[in-house]
View 1 (tube, rainbow, N blue to C red):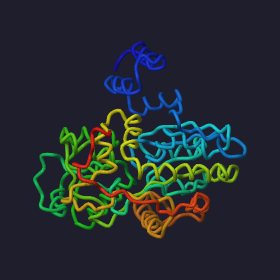
View 2 (tube, rainbow, N blue to C red):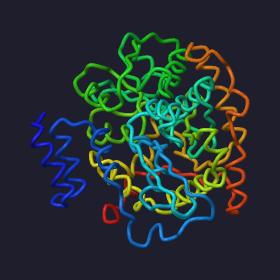
View 3 (cartoon, rainbow, N blue to C red):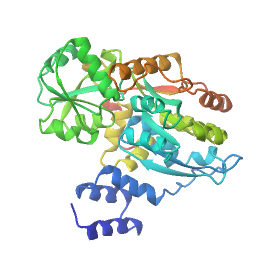
Amino acid sequence: MQSRDELDRLAQDYLDRRIDRRTFMRQGLLWGLSLSSLTAFLASCGTAAPAGQGAAVGTAGAPVHINVGYFPSWEGGLSGVIIKKRNLWQKYLPKGSTVNWQVQIVGPPIVADLLANKEQIGYIGDMPAFVATAKREIADLRLVECNEFSPNGEMCCVLLVRSDAPKFKDYQEAVRWLTGKTIGISGKGSCGDRFVTTLMQKEHISARKEYLDPTIILTSLRTGKIDACQTFEPHVAQITSEGVGRVVATGNDFGDQDADFIVMRKDFIDQHRDAAVGWIKADIEALQFILGHPYETVKYLAAELPGYTTRQLWTAIYGRLPSSSGAGTVRTVAQAVFSKEVTDFIDKSFQFLYQDKILTIDKPLPGAVYTALVDQAVKELGVTAPLGAIRGEPASSFNPAKA
C-alpha cells in the first residue's frame, strides 16, 4: 500500500484533470486500493452530463433528492449504469431533482443502506432483494421492477472449474467431479448459493462450500485454493478470458433462474409517487438502449469497471456461453414487468430462503411485489413488456473496431 501523501497526490491529479478516470482507477488498483473505495471516490466527484444527453429539463412536480445504490460489477445493475451515464433521470424526474450514486460491489450493503434510509432506490440481485422486503419491522421496502431476468440462469447461476480440471463430456460428469472438492460461492443465501445447493441435491454429491467475496474468487481459483466456483457476470467472462477457469454448467441444466430487481422504500413511493414512476420510466429507456446499442453499452460500463476490457464486458452481456455447459440461447430478458414466470421464480426463491433458515417466512409479505409503478410506467410510455431478449452471440461476432 502506498503512503498517504502518494494517495492524496493521485486523487488530486484526477481532480485537476492531469490524469483521466481510467488511469486513476488502474493506478489505485495497482496500489492495493479496493474497487469499492475508488468508485465511491469517483461518485463523490460527480459525473458531468455527456454532450447531447440529459438535455430534457425534467417533469413537473416537487424536486426530489435521492441516493441510489447500484453495483456495476453485476450485470443486473447495468441499466442503472446507463441511467447514470446518459443522465436519463433528468428526463423523468421533476426539474431541480438531484441523484447521488452510491457504488457497491455486492447487494447486501445496498440493502443495509435502504433499510437505514441512506438510499431510497437500489439495484439488487434477486436473493438480497427478497431478503430486503422481509425486514418490514425495520423499514418497508418493495420490489418495484424486475429490470433483468434470465430464464436460463446465466447472470449468476454459472459454474466454473479451474483450467487444469479434466475435460468433461457433459455437465453431469463435471458436477460428479466436484465430489469431495471445494466450491467457491459468492455469498451465503445468494443466487449462487441457491444454484450450488440445487445442483448438489439433484446430482447427489457432497462438496465443501466456501463463501467468498466475488472480487477474490478469480485469485482463489488461479491459486488452487478452490477447485470450482459459482460467480456472476462479468466475473465469469473475466475468469474465462484469462484462462483461469472454464464454464461447465449453468442454471439451465438444473431449472434455475436469476434476476435483478429495483427496490424502493415505500415511504419514498408514498411521498414522491411521480418521481418513483419516473425512475422506472428512465430504467425502461435504459433497458431499450442496452438492447439496441451493445457497443455503446459496454463502453459506458468499461468506464465504471476499468479492470475489465470491452471484449470481456461484451462477452458477459452479449456473448454465448459454451454449448457444452448446457447454456440456453437467451442470456437475459429486459423484463421490467412482473410476469407469472417472474412471480413463480420469486415464490420458489422464498422457499429456498426459508428452508435455508435465512428467512422465517416462506412467501413474500403482502405488497412486497409492488407492481403498480411499473405497470403505470409501461402504460404511459406506450411500450410492450418484456421489452426484448439478448441472445448470446458467438465470440467471432465481437467487433473490436466498434468497442
